[in-house]
Amino acid sequence: MLPFIRDINLETGLLKRFDNKVVRRLSDMRGMYADGAAEKGLIENGDPLLYEMFEVTPPETPGNLTYCTTVVYPGLVGNEYFMTKGHIHVIRDTAEIYFFTHGEGVLVCETPGGEFNEQRVNAGDVAYVPTGWAHRTANIGEDKLVFLAVYPAGAGHDYDFIAERGFRFRILRDGQNGYVVR
Ligand code: PAN
Ligand code: ZN
Image (cartoon, rainbow, N blue to C red; front, side, top):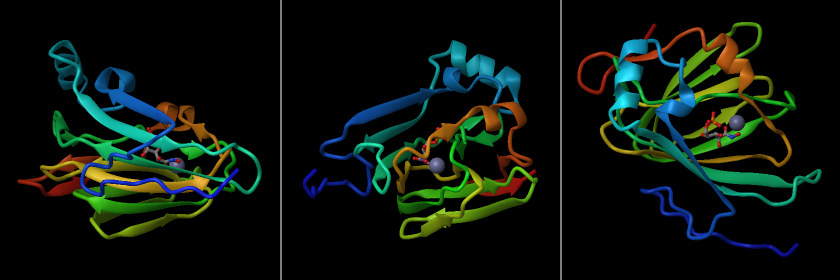
């Protein structure tokens, strides 16, 4: 494998070349938002696009890294901001770096033991998610929230962990662009 460079548009999150694109609509996250009636209504009326990921995926051999951009669109399901599904890595002993390049968001982290952490993030913030923490990102702004994630290739994503138990707290709207954790 040769060294390589990819060009990222910091504002849109678009990579000029990527290996894989993931698109998540609300119907891909059924049951994850608190307001089931709002979720149903939105799915029936166009099924909004919540977020997209553009991945660069070197071989999943020991020592390699994967990176990708995530673009979380602005919006609400009921009173809950658009967010990612959230996951913990299959290999629990995995840390990850998020570099936020555009927008306003909240990074939500939780351990299997129930320790909870939420932090507001803006363009320019570099977040470190330590090993053993599940993570989710919510967009609390009016524009796209964009970030670059870097993590060990082959770490895997355990979505069932969050789908089954959720996070302890949700990121809800509180006034214009404000949020409350509840
Ligand atoms: C990120 C996330 C991305 C989308 O690249 O995968 O933001 O969130 P979900 O994977 O929870 O749908 C990351 O943490 N990768 O490990
Ligand atoms: Zn991750």
